[in-house]
Length: 572
Image 1 (cartoon, helix red, strand yellow):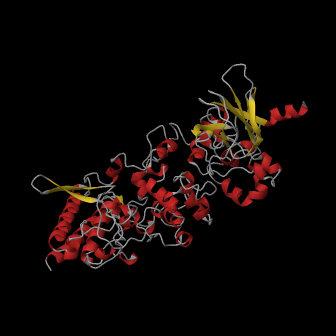
Image 2 (tube, rainbow, N blue to C red; image 1 turned 90 degrees about the vertical axis):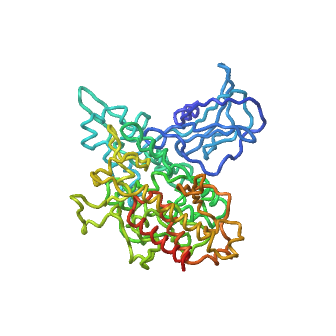
Image 3 (cartoon, rainbow, N blue to C red; image 1 turned 45 degrees about the vertical axis):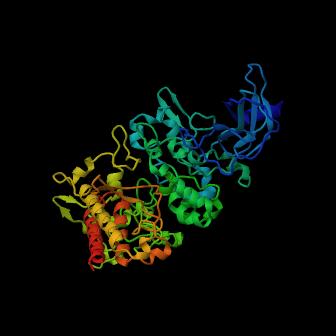
């Protein structure tokens, strides 16, 4: 009897309904190799078991849940009110999922697991001092004691406490008393601490050599999204609509097809791979965990202050050259360039050069385009770091500020436009990363709407017309019979010239999927260097994606150089 009572005290459970229409034999089987928290919970990592999904699989029903580290047991019952709960196996499940191959029609499932036992961050100091001494200086540590939170009455507001304390509302979590107007609470669980993100850790502190109770290390955005959400902190909802919230399908397929592609593509397309590389780990061990997006922890270091209030891994402004090609060793290049703009760490030209013939420059070249550090200019300047052509949006170091009509160059670079302040009552900056409003432009362009857009688009059309003209009239005979778009890369970049019924050019479009090819390797060798340089410049401008906004004069110079180079081939 005493043993049963102890079991009830030390375990917690959660219930889910499974709409199952058949009954199969068997009990458990493995479901997936890597599981991440898929739903948000106030406070971060759930302290109680939380059902995260149920779906039919080939051999039964896959039930998933999340919660504190430890052993779990699954139960089921029929939809009859008087039906008993039946244990499926024993309380030995550590992986937080189960494939149930024997179940009732319209069955209910319940899972019981370890009860939450919180200890507070001081208990973690014994073994994790090197990390804890930095965490105490972050905004998270003062989430409960900050003057603004106190002034707003948050310390006694049950709506605020789950995200500003540890384990509020759970038996061993934060609590407060108010006797005769005297407010008191346990200080060891105030503020955002280790257990908010890693789950209850008292069991681990009591038995550090027990691998079954080691707190979780979770990089899913849902951990942060449990608190950074809602009208005051809409960060999670905004991120979830951005391009950062999902791994590009083509990149995921490329990484999954070959281990050699995991590091080269994953360094910017997979959050798990990038974090592994930053931490000096081998990303090849993540072959079953490549579909983690660019989550909060990829840009923000939760354990460090990094001299900025939002705990970014890298600064938001730099003017140093950086281009990380697929053949570069990530750790060597990254560790030597941690002072490079955070966005530029991924949004760079990846070592693109006009001599490349396989494919056009990757659509990630924004940092180098902003600095004017990639391309082939007519005056002979190339993509050498010594020949930058930065735009005003690139900004200048604080020691070299220049004034233009009473304003300054942008020193926050990308975030100035792509992370504008959210509308009240939110006090954050948008994480959709889209330029939702042009109002920010008026800070500098009050009487000047800017120069990009139509003018750049018209120049792109001109270059396309000239390239097609060269292909039709001057291309070598061996290329004329190639049956491909003669001036293109082997894998075409997708630029198509649009014409009216009379055959006159009216504009251009870029296709994501193309049904034509470019010359093969042998054909590429027949294309003159001037044409290769011209198409390189053309795709730099187009694949930058801003139609010149990032660096307008540089964009015009690249296209002008392309026109001159093609002219030399048309009229030698």
